[in-house]
Image (cartoon, rainbow, N blue to C red; front, side, top):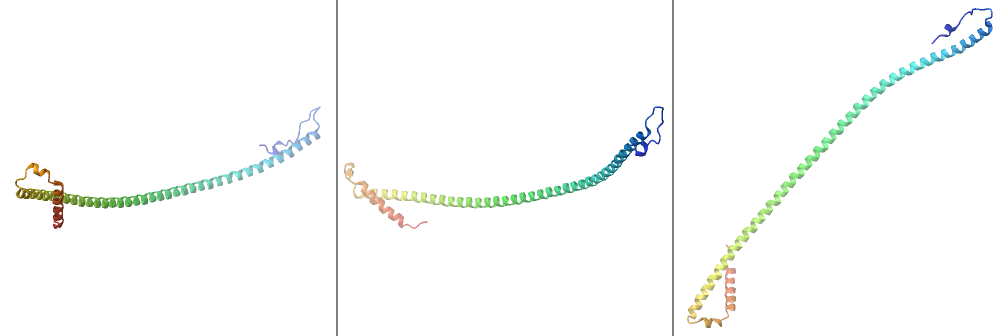
Length: 188
């Protein structure tokens, strides 16, 4: 931009029919005065702009530092959150392992108790079968013995004579006697 001193012209050349010197000087003086005012405003604006640019640089630098601080803080927060999440997952895994272990022990104990109870019932059932077989043998032996006694007592009885005998009543009597005998026997 031109300085006001550069547009000041000390003299005009005069021609025969030249311009009125006083009017030219007044016009130039008015222009110089307005130009001087604009020049000073422009200079002030340049200074203000330089100050604003300097503040912008400072603010930018501080904003960059603040952004770095925020970035570091957010990275630290994320790292802390990850550590906390890892801790929570680890604790949950430990609790799950403890619960699983307890459940396995409990199931093992229940299963063992069930197997023991099953084996006891199986033993009792086998013992019952053995006693039942012995009881059947005892009954059969008793029937055979009674039949032999009957044949000894009544050797001349024929098949027609046996028709009239009430075998069901006799069998009930024999069964009752043998049951009493089995009950009185001590258990082995």
